[in-house]
Image (cartoon, rainbow, N blue to C red; front, side):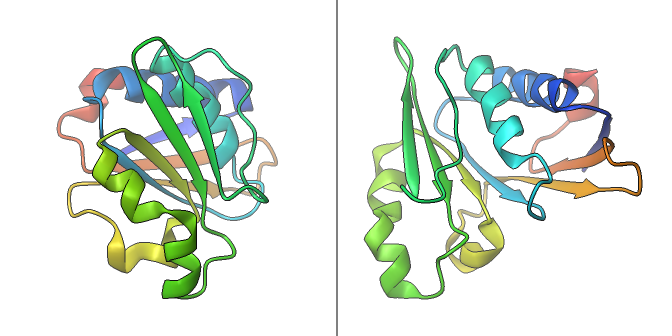
Length: 148
């Protein structure tokens, strides 16, 4: 597991940008963290790292947002309101997994049982400093060397 400190949304975006550039296309990124931790900021940086220039917003009400680049697609899920199999199936999650595109999933703790074994886990934790975040990333080897 690699651990990083961020002191602003911009720094969080930069960490995600570098992660996106280090990963192969088609990975599932499972994000964990409280409300306001910076999951959407992380996704914004991740999309940029994939070469996708677009407005990234939380998919709270849509459940999934699609961001397209010239040759890549990123699906951004919000699983906050998912509380059972029927809810999960209604998102189309399994269809998106089968598509082979990159998925980034907020509130992954709500669907942990169906996350792929090889997913990249990103946990963002707030600290006592209002601007500081601890970002722990697992599921990628030698990440400290890649992102520093």
